[in-house]
Length: 146
Image 1 (cartoon, rainbow, N blue to C red):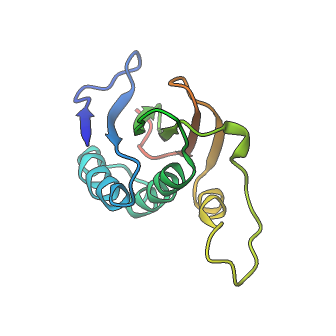
Image 2: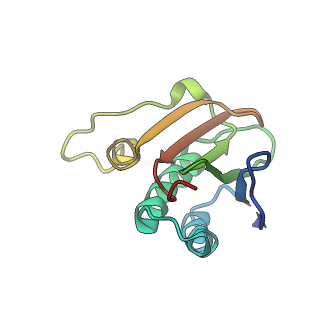
Image 3: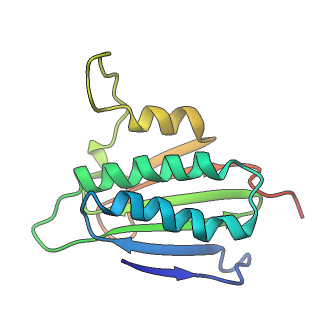
């Protein structure tokens, strides 16, 4: 795992931090732990627990659904955009395969994006600027207006 913290985010460079993770199940708790550690000092007014939960769902999906013939990593970046927090999770999967599912009560999987959809203020899936897929969630009013 590698990570970067951007200590002085500004309008021209709003990224707060980033991490890259191997596409293995152990990366999910590691992403949760480090994201919480890196986000908390910025003192967002939104629930850090909610953000960690949503990150966990998206990293899990990236690990499970990312595919590539070459070695690859899951990339996570988080940004301050005005008063909003935007979190992006990138993997080499196909953007068109990201969709909300309606799992049956007995289905063991398929609820991650439903959870993201219900907790985040907005979310989006599409092509990643790194190639593959990016799934993003946003928490509006994560910080007070300047």
